[in-house]
Amino acid sequence: MISGEAPIPPPGAPRSRLEALLRGGHFVVTAEMQTTDGADPGEVRELAAGLGGVVDAVNCTDNSAAHPHLSSVAAGHLALDAGLEPIVQFTCRDRNRIGLQSDLLGAAALGARNVLLLTGDGVGAGDHPDTSPVFDLDSLHALRIARVLRDEGTYLSGRRLSTPPAYFIGAVENPFAPPHDYRPVRLAKKIEAGAEFIQTQICFNVRRLRTFMTAAADLGLLERSFILASVYVARSERALRYLRDIVPGIDVPDEVMGRLSGLPRERQEAEGFRLALETVAAIRELPGVAGVHLSSIRGQDAIRRLVAETGLLPRPTPPAASPA
Amino acid sequence: MNLATRALVVLEQASKEPLFDCRMCGQCILHSTGLTCPMACPKSLRNGPCGGVLVDGHCEVEPWRPCTWVVAWRRSRQLPLWRNHMERLNPPVDWRLHGTSSLVNLATGRDRQTPTGWKLSR
Image (cartoon, rainbow over all chains, first blue to last red; front, top):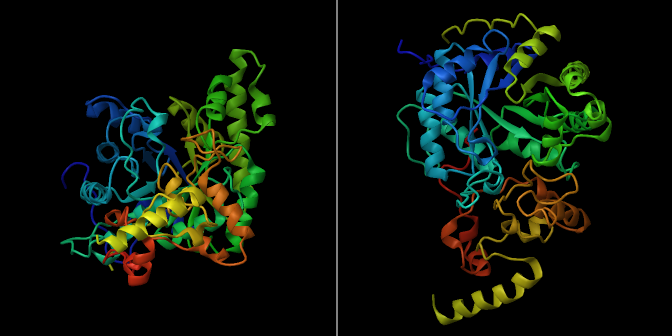
């Protein structure tokens, strides 16, 4: 096999390791891979290798916070080189329906077996606020298109593909942003559009997540999708403030902020880590949560430690896909 | 566009723009979105709010005003009709219809045409 290439799964088999683990009832662990700003493939492989063995898949973000970085499709391919399964992200901010379909096929041809479709931050959030935003589609349209390529074997136009892509389809949802009582309904729409697994926005408010999970269960969504809750490892009060005040859509309650604010700098990291540990533990108690998604700014070591200390190691091996 | 159609476009714009902040997408779903034009969302979202809505319910791109979809959700709860339309999956925008009369497109059924590959067969 050529480097970084993944075999096409037989019909009916899980498309990815992540899908196999979720369908097998395992509590999964995913993490956000740090972005890179250069053309050196080694840099990406090294970052991916740093998470090897501790997570089941890594998210390769798509120009996160509207800043250009090395492409998510390329990062996903390089993560595979390093032996890690990627979740390749695609936003609607930078590509229209033509670009999206070509990139989805490209990612699949380069071995991506998980894709994740999202709206994307506005261009004003990044360092090129003077550019034109695309938003030809919304994330639900993108999800449906990913599904159409895979299950119908055609483009959105109806034109046939020679070989449909084989990937597990993911979406995001933010239970912590208004209008809170519409969020579960919107999740149902995302599942109808094509989503099979969901990663939530970062959770600092477990009570709010519990309410969301209850509503999702009442709508029957837990039988139709797998929901992973996101946990952030805050390494300083400044990082937490940044999430609260600068990144849109993150709810950091005062009691959470209060745990780090006022502490001397050298104790903040330990307290942030403790907060993440407690959040993971609380999330694991919530009925219906299928896994956690971890992130931290330049904190791969913190993620490794967190997975180890929450007792989520060793990561399980999915049963080998048998030809149908 | 003939004169009658043109007049309709002008009338439609003159009434819907001040009332609903209408952007003349030509495939109107106002009744499905609490009489709130989804095209006023800076991301042109047709299926609900993005994840960036601020804690106070304001828009992340234009933080001085409420999120279009927060308003749409609230108003749709107050409408006696079409409440369940907020659960509907709306198809992608046909950008060719931009600036045309949605009333004409409604009458001809043109606004209900979806891309050939849009529907899943199972």
